[in-house]
Length: 311
Image (tube, rainbow, N blue to C red; front, side, top):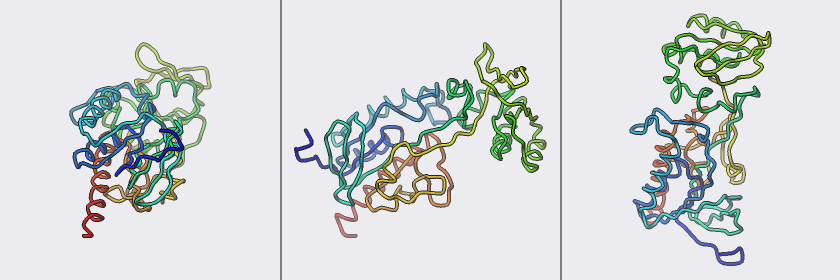
């Protein structure tokens, strides 16, 4: 099909083929909704060597879960996969148009966004190279792997105390790397309560060693760690929320209800890009993303049923 030909129409276009999009596809397929899943080979958890805290898949590489989930969804005749990037989403309930990078277009009655977010890491040499393994941002996903070891927390903001409070029962020793910045009194007091020590020297680099990480400091000393936690900043991975005029939280997450409905009729969202009203940021978890994908797909089905019956 080329740009001059009539575009194809689907009940639901699922944009994104991570855990949220794949679970949405399976749910839509089981409910005989004609769905197309549009995805690329880029995923937020690509850097992670293993994922954890997922029922029945603890310790499995993320790519293996995606392969298995796609195989499940492909069993359903109403589900189609296209490995192509979406450039633009426009339109309204009943008539959305998706412009694709291969020059084609398709139309859908509803759109389910599952495109995730992009992480922006602290600008410290070595952090990006070790991120997803010895450097992490989620204690639920990676904390247990550092049990009983010296665990570092990079940064002097309030998140240092938040990380320390969660990691205190796990780590053998907690070290906050202030990176040359000053901690406020409340953060200092909170760290003292859990026995975390503070290293104030600037952090020059992080490097892998035979036993973990070495942090090179500004005074030409180094500190050995079993693992390091960092706070990431994140942005929407795609421009679709802006293109469609969706309501977002103060931090930039798409606002959704319990069935993934956004502020625009016919547009649903699931996974790391979305958060329920009242929650300041998404809960970044493969399992939660998958559950949100199922809920959003159920929302699509429920809305279609109402449109079909008028009740």
